[in-house]
Length: 289
View (cartoon, rainbow, N blue to C red):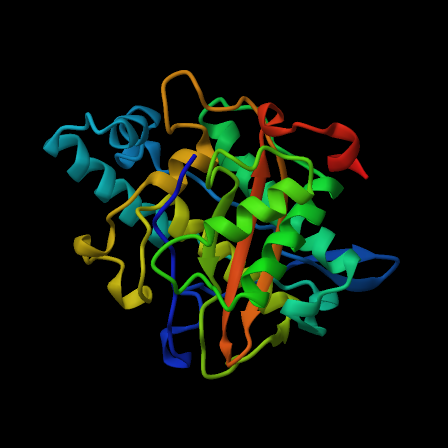
């Protein structure tokens, strides 16, 4: 669906990076050696606190009542507060250049993001999306369009012309506008102000971006979670959860993630979460090659 709202996160080191809490690893005995099980990333929709399938759909249809809107905001606040994640996998301590990831790292980040999306989709009875190498190539084309033409998540809207060119080059429908991208900006911190950060931090930041998308487009730090004015859009949630319309949302999509920077500002990194519904694939041979 067409998404004209962008998600930005600019927070300082004192904000606790992503507003996460420390997770103590579970000790596991293995041949008399103590090893540590990496914490798993989980996202839960607080349905009992107001964040319901019906309210997200009504918000996207423009039919939500004022009372239900307040309940949706309350549920979104709970979602921001209650969902926390700290990556404790020692393998993720390595430093990467987010805008120049290896193919394996791109696949890992895409599947990490997809697992979280499918978790919340399943909670609302929706089918899984799937990872696609073709979608990754498409996502990389979009990221290149953004970089080459000096666009980013900090613009007022998606870079539609670039998305359409990337779609045409990928064998996709290029005349339907912006129907492929959910976009966010990686948090800017004093510790990681440029392209480089550890895989641990990158995964934690992606986790935060997904929370933003699901829970009202929240922008701010942990200290702002109770500020109701910071919860203002559920279009991204509607897209990720298949709740933008009553009967037109695709049952499943092909998904991948890419990143782009700006030539004159290394602090601003855009996250391109790309999903492709089968109905937009015009040339399967071109899309799959």
